[in-house]
Length: 522
Ligand code: C2O
Ligand code: CU
Image (cartoon, rainbow, N blue to C red; front, side, top):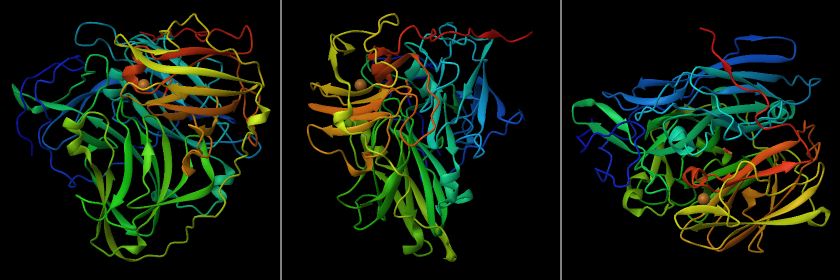
């Protein structure tokens, strides 16, 4: 299935020059798409479900006939999915307590692999939500309490200072889905027709001493970015999914360290066929107000690192045996290896007519737009590269410096400016959902009109977003937490070096490291 690569390099090594220019050839559209298993709680009480997840190294088969060492939640890549019922207690909303146990041990150079877990898209109670220096050291665990206070497709991933890119690349990422009563009532595709698609890239090398050993190679290209020439969907290179002739809901997450995707469907692999349609129904912070239809060849879906979009594809217009490819027509600035990653997976239509009582409602969930004039103030953040570092407003990460201090309940406009340097930055704000006001004075893309927590800031762009640092997000009963949180570029290599800063909501909140990790009892 695979041909030999060149040098063998240890897992987790950082190199400046790739030994082999390409990963070995891997068969495409053969392996079935796996669905990450939903994690059952260890136990439950009236209000809360309790889970435990071990972070550990595991040798798993990503390519048939080979095994690869990964670092995964419960030893999986991607990690198990947590699915929770959100909303108020009255409407059946539940809280989760997740115990993350670090059993990762040491990396190749003998350094302890410190873990930090961030649930991207939800605040955690008490206030620590994966602050980059709030370590769970090997042999320790920490319990995180998640309120599930609104419905959305979110994810959990590693956030350890300086090593987030490597740790997430090695596999430390998983999906977390919250659904509330409103969403259950909508006639959207459900059950087996509601499918997560976790997209990422990777670079592999064959161990010359053992051809069955396929190594994940992490190379951050001198702190610039890390790219792979193999695309993984739910952990498998170029999978195939058999679909019935009906509608499916796909929850897309881009879990790549540095690669953005520009997605389109096509009936042919090497060009875009006309009229293939996906309907976007949700983004980072949950359902959009109204669905947004995207049709090839002119309308595509741009999904940056850490962004989530939910789409509906209706396969009823295809015939049995047809294949529909999920294409990536974007470049990432690494054109040498982009070539092979222009198709992510294929859908193969099987079976004849099937009943489909699902629908795409014309209105999904009300999204109340925050008017610009309600803002208490505007802050500007400049994202740029300088002397091989990635900076915000000319400064490097300092966990003790607070760069923005909104009061509780304040509404603020944050202006993200990228003066250009060959890079775009997907900017992520912890704790709250925000809305895009405009990009260089122009309206955002229609599918960016909902609640979001990651914002594409392209070269020479000013992107203005607005959000409320308040006790409740409009239209949602949202628990609110004061204290220190991070804002950063979600190109994880940029984040590590060190395009990340701290904002504090209110004054004198608790420390972001308020509860120390505990030792695993021997
Ligand atoms: Cu998805 Cu601060 O991270
Ligand atoms: Cu960046």
